[in-house]
Image 1: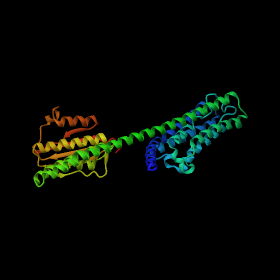
Image 2 (image 1 turned 180 degrees about the vertical axis):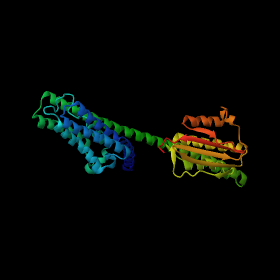
Image 3 (image 1 turned 120 degrees about the horizontal axis):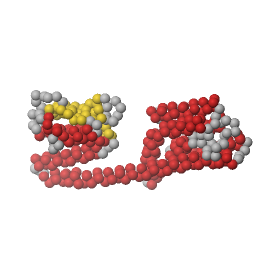
Image 4 (image 1 turned 180 degrees about the horizontal axis):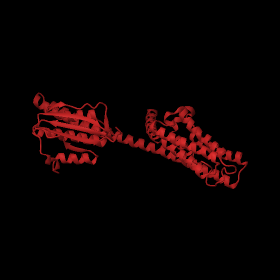
Length: 387
């Protein structure tokens, strides 16, 4: 049993880490590109060699743009990840060979392009699972750090024919860069564990709240129904109350999600008015979801506007919803007596408050046209997504 629990926890942390890496890999390539461009502009190179280094930097920046739109090597895994890791050994050799004669490791602050290996090593520290199949649980990251550091000393020896105080300080300064970057990666990896524990606590809290709901509302509601038998009207009233309670709980759960499913939200909110007013048309939104604040506003608008239609004597209501150039538009029309435009400017009315909330999100609530009978209100709110 303990091993199963550990496997579940590892899977949860892997999921969180994968999401983080997926969003950040492009930054690693952008950082490497910037490091190469800086090296080309600051360190001594002949014009032709400087051009080569600049081209390498531009290629990394271009890859960053591509990865930002697609997926990076660590998310792809396999050969793509291995190729990126291999560059931390290949590019330093190229830079060392391109450096002007007698200038490699001539600055005690750092060898040329010393920060280049930092990004891949950081991702190796954060996302070690990418090497699990090939190397098991061996300390691959530490081995890579040691290999990168030894490579600098080897290059200095081969190119300069030996060591002096400046070249040793240059190599040691470079070692600090890669060790710090790997250490930061390990810290980030630990933070993903903290996030996982937080998620677990939240999930446990929600489970407890749900069981409390079952006990305090469902079980007590069923007990009340049993007590009312054989009084059928009283039993039906209790069933209606229980159904309303369950519907409100479902709405609460829906609105707690990061992405709220519109079809389920509309269905739950409109169902509460079934039998009270005739719903002649309902929206069909398929699998479309919206961010939490937009979902909360749509739920509130449906509740307020349908309730107003009932209170003011409407017999039929039409509910429509669609997206228009990055805006979600909810339209509710009814055949009631209508209302004066000044109502929406009265701070004491639900319409005024609803319009204010819509405008806070960058949308609006307005009456569409002047009908001979009834009213048509349109709520618009930005979805926050590209059309």
